[in-house]
Length: 608
Image (cartoon, rainbow, N blue to C red; front, side, top):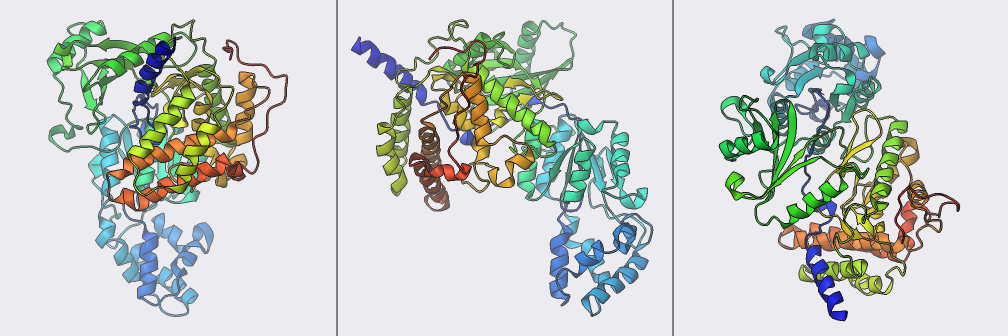
């Protein structure tokens, strides 16, 4: 009996080597959103922001800082700047009138003609490469693109638009239309010319007022600050990669390097297509990854193909899981086939349906109402409870991972990971390595767990607050469900917390996003945990301990990892120790309280 337990534990330990923390894993774009168009502001989005330009201009010309901004805001909709943007006055009149206003504010002459010249030359004429690449990628996936800009007429009578017009289906400029943002009429004008509804469009602007106006009309609005971060947010909203575009004949995306004859023959058989079926378009989504992802389209059907480079064991496991969960009530992508025939692509691959819906990478869910945010987070927690309530025997997964002493083995594995990648010792990690094994929860439950359950691993219904697909199940197994719950509550941490994307300091109540107590209450009520989670500080400490160990391993091989990045691991370890001693819950203002007794678990809950 002892030998059998040791062999089982050894097999389970070997499986743990495939586990990684979610923030360090490749993101699979396995969903295609229902958005049809992306609308871009120009200044501060496609080309540099004029705000910094105005500051530099004021400094160079000994103009009091903020003079131009004050003149722009003075007088409301009939001021000189707004009239210039709407094309009601030309450049010469603008220079004279606006220059006089600025001079009165500054108490000395302000050469506005020089500022206007700077506004249409130098860096302002060079589009931002990151945004240009994002536009190319979006268009390659069939999305329409538009420019909606508060723009002006130059001295020659032409608008200033230093962009490749062929990249946009529609260009709407305030100086040509006689309307300017945030007037809702100019947004409607742009949408009508694109032929899409507000709910089918994503809007990007660097001014809060314009973003709020777009959101009120029903568009998904993104406030642009950091350009790279904004592109990443757009990437999550659209569910497609917005980098890796390689210009060439026909402006095709990254080369697929797939044997198309063999793949076409296979797909016609697997999908029951006729020889005269539509052609098959292929785009590689992650060319730098070892397990290549491809988006296939044929006959209006969207498919995802994941090709394994080395062994098929992980794919066999995922294939088995998805097949088992089909019809269980847990929303998962529809699996089509696991092909292990090397004559097709030279390596095993999975083929599945792409899920239509919304994906979110920003936990604050910008552009949504507080009620919509709350409903989506509640749907997220409901789905987590569905996973944890699954009767694994009924779907043939009772041996899925063989979790002998799950938490104990996890602690051992992550401790070894830290030791193997240790650079300078981290005092908090040393304390945690001693503390965690001594405080393992006495009563652990065993359910199916996701392994990296988070908002960005879910696909939501295009319109309803419902989860239509749970993604990235490759790290799932039988284990302690509370390890999943810690992943799902990262939004309850502060925004400046290292390596995590919390938003608690942005006002969860005002955003409509459930607080930590509300999340705990919903989970415990649904799971029938009338006593709550007595060891919650342990699970938070353990989650952060694993994250610190994982980051330490990632950063060891880099020079940066031994300076700034190494410091991040230390910060996370310090926070983990705070939770271990229960001081970390000051972040939540108080320890989460247990829900009221007498609540009912979800139907089908498994026994402890």
